[in-house]
Length: 283
Ligand SMILES: [Zn+2]
Image 1 (cartoon, protein in one colour):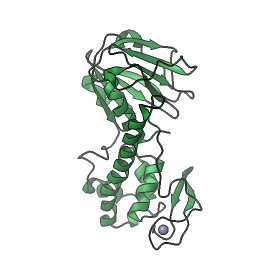
Image 2: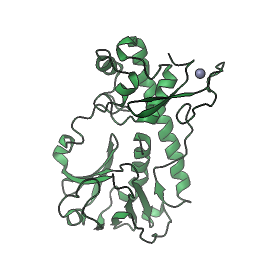
Image 3: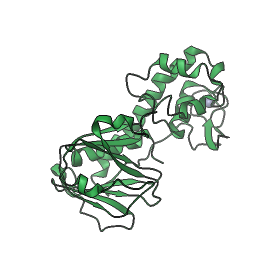
C-alpha cells in the first residue's frame, strides 16, 4: 500500500506530464472504483488545463483551469503509468490497454497518463477548488509532517493527554497526516521508543524528538523515490513503487543495525498490524 513518500514520488513523476498541460481527452472505463466516479467526469476533465499538481496526505490534487480540483487516491494497489513523450522526458510507447486501466488521460503534450488499479480501492473525485480542503476525505486530516504546522508543541499537545500506544497515536491521521505503518515503525526505531509505550508515559522531550525524526525518515524515503524516477525513464513508466531499505520494517529475526547492539528485530501485532522494533534499542 503506497504511503506518503510513494504518493509524493508519483506526484513528482506526474508533474512533467501533467502540470501546465491540457487534458485533450479523458477516458473513463467504468462507473466506479472504491466509490462511484463523479457525474460526467470525462466531460468535466476534457479540455481542462492542470494548473498545479499538489499532495495532501496520501491524496494527489490536480487544480484545474475549470475551478475544479481532481482528487486522486491510489488505494491499495493503484498505479499511475506515464507513456508518450511529454517535454522529451519520457520515451515509453503507449502500452496496449490492460484489463485494469480504469482511467486514461491523453494530454495535449503527447503524454498518456493511465490509472490502473486491480483491486479498485483507489478513488477519483472532482471538488470545487475553492472549498477542496472541506472535502470529507480531507477536512479532518492533521498537519502535513513535512509542513510548518507539524511542530514539537503540536505533537506534545496532542499526545501527552492520551493513554494510547505511541504507534497507534502516530497512525491517527488527525494528529499527523499521511503516516502509515512502515514509516511509523522506522521513526520509532530512530527515536528509540518502544511502539507499545503509552503516550502519557513518554517524556515531552522524547515526544518532541519525533518531529525531526519523522521528517528525516520521510525525506530519506522521498529521496529514494526520486532516485527511482531517474531510473524509470529507462523502465516501464510506472510511478511510485521503489526499492527502499528499512531498519526494522519487515526485518523480524534479523540483527539490529545499531552499532553495539546484539539484539534481533522483533515483531508484535498491534491493532491488527505488525510493528517491528528492536527490544534493546527501543524502550
Ligand atoms: Zn538494537
